[in-house]
Image 1: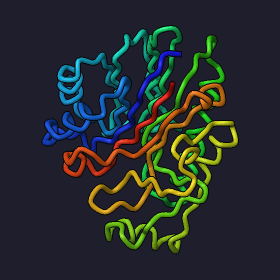
Image 2 (image 1 turned 135 degrees about the horizontal axis):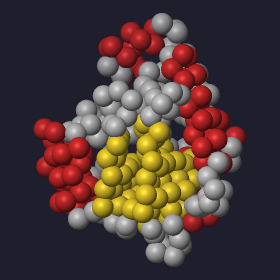
Image 3 (image 1 turned 180 degrees about the vertical axis):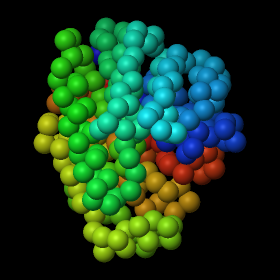
Image 4 (image 1 turned 135 degrees about the vertical axis):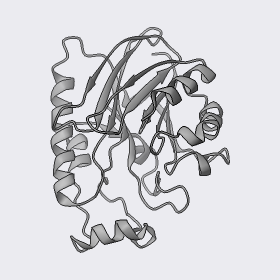
Length: 253
């Protein structure tokens, strides 16, 4: 397989007033594939794709949160899944990587760590796994995006979260239920960051006061041996004004 670098990045409400900062971040990262969450403004996505000279596809979610994937390589087809339980959106993009097609399942799941929302994410992942298994010609693929879920053993620095989030978590005494990510792990997927960095927090949110790892790049067993790097990007300085999320980067060789 051709080596490639992929980034997943939540733009925080579309980023219309932060296009230059977002572009500076993405240009610095120089990824071959970019999965954008909260890509709510198609004009912003088109502008970024044009400046970066990348192919792109934008798709509507089920509410006011939308999604997009950009690629250095041609996009042969795509499909958006935005019906329950895949609320918000999953964008499946088939990319003609030289020597081997690659499918990116760019996902953005419901927020909030309350149990009813975690159950919805657990259901969404089950549906996504069934969709992947049903593909007539399964290609190598990745599941990426802001899954809004907490992995086993990950800590959340709740005391540093905004007051509104602390109030929400008070409803379940600060308990965090971990059902969604274990469902992916049980299906054989590798959590790319945690696989390479078993003891680092890897927080991807909040850029002004990092507390939580919400963003993931998940590789099936067939791709896991090709994983060479995975890291949370903290440069350039524009990262701290471009979004409330840090980009997550993975490299496959």
